[in-house]
Image (cartoon, rainbow, N blue to C red):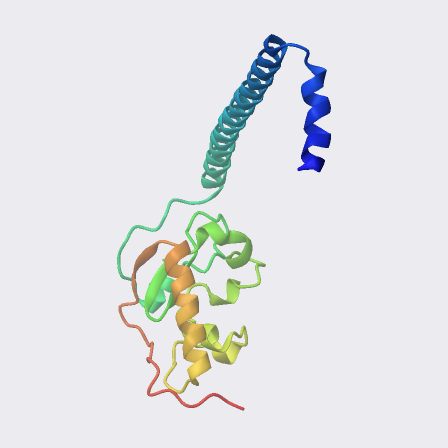
Length: 194
């Protein structure tokens, strides 16, 4: 109790009248209310700036998308293709007016938006114009894997194939199916190599 008196007594003695004490309390309350109001104003301002920034970046992103779309050919109309027809959409047409297509598990995807990867000179161009399911399963670009025969895959390879398919499905539009598909689905999976 004496420690509290030692602190509070000088403060209480500082104010000579009750009127000064009340006035000081009111000033403290007003200062606190002022700080709370400033804090709310700043938070509201930050939220408005965040919304404004998002709308600006969204419109900038939309502008970039429009510019990007101008560089790409029109999307391939939906419909099934034969393997021979699919081969024409490997991205290697001279005037680059055709979309770039590939197939995974017999489903055709328009990967034109990924032209840097799937277009001529891109690291994944070898997959285009064909069903390269085995290559996706084996995570390989080797010529002997650029086909759709997935009959003898290990469990890990089946998982890789399904992951690729999911990625294509999420990112690129589906065009159709390969009419004369040579896709051979995995048989009962073999145990993973050790």
